[in-house]
Length: 237
Image 1 (cartoon, rainbow, N blue to C red):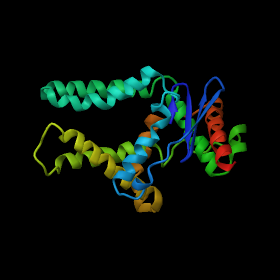
Image 2 (cartoon, helix red, strand yellow; image 1 turned 30 degrees about the horizontal axis):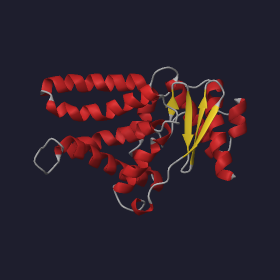
Image 3 (cartoon, one colour; image 1 turned 60 degrees about the vertical axis):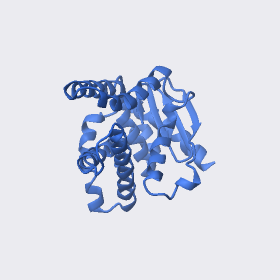
Image 4 (cartoon, rainbow, N blue to C red; image 1 turned 180 degrees about the horizontal axis):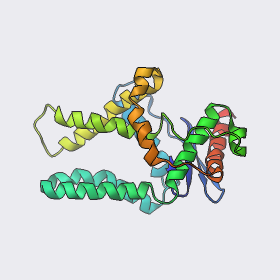
């Protein structure tokens, strides 16, 4: 994930945060409980929660204010059920704008493109050429969180419309959790299959990446490559 002041690269076991100032912070990814690794829906939710580890922990990449802001962005929308509908819509839009402004401030968009380029360079075995600027792998990634969000939006819409139980205070939370779990199952199926039909599900997200990424400078690509280097070094040790 891209941050305003650097890039986070993670594998199943390790993560690294390369900052604009050249420093690199390293950490270990938490392992999902064995009992949940093969359970449909729960396995996807677990992976999704653990993916936030680099920014959720105290020793991670986010400041205390940022962690509180992200927590508020996750919790406050569920409180809108107690607000009149017209006010809830306005507050929901305001929360969305505030969250996007927090996520994409500073150099995040360019570093987001650098993140994708560095990962593609590793997968294509062109790390040296990319570092030197002789190669420029794509800044668009099929595994980007933007693609996940583009999948989650229609799944959440359908889950909300097809919810079979009477509406209650807890319904928004239940619909959201179920939608995320279903989206993760679909996401993992698409990523594993690699077929043309499956890849078609990623087209909206890939198109949306034209807004969520910018063409990175070589300096920004090298920041992401430092994080890739840290993760690969520990994976291959």
